[in-house]
Length: 197
Image 1 (cartoon, rainbow, N blue to C red):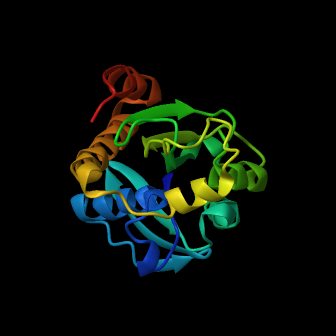
Image 2 (image 1 turned 90 degrees about the vertical axis):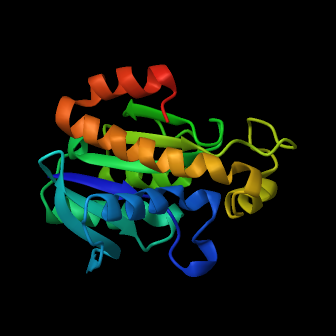
Image 3 (image 1 turned 60 degrees about the vertical axis):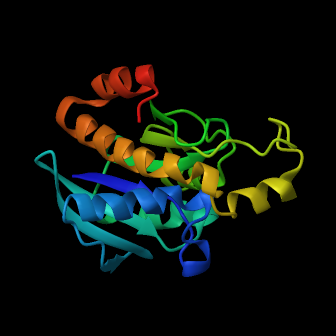
């Protein structure tokens, strides 16, 4: 079984935040693949079902982004899952809004949710789907304006970017179907090459 985790913060006030794009992907897939995400396990909303004829567990941790590892580690222990059975969807400041990038393993890239997962499961070797949210123009790549970054990721997408979000959600769902049916290498070749949404 593949554990598919979307990162985000619980509660209506965060629902449309940039930081919650992972949650929105899970909600989109739950509807698209008819997998209700309504069972509470390991401080998470979860749902079991099939995508591309493969059993999956869709997950929205309720621990808030920065503590996502607590929920993920609990689920991996409960289902005896290895790191390569975990796929995490999260926002990325260094990609243009709506752009997808797939990768296997690597460091956190400064994302605190990914850092928490790495620390809690003791491995970097899990799949990632990064969805671009762009970077505010008045900050640098070194994140020295941390307060501005926090305000930015906890803000909603502006109206001029709204039309980029739905294709990104659909692209992420297609990428996950491709990973499950054909493997990560095939999915990376297809989606990373075309920037694919």
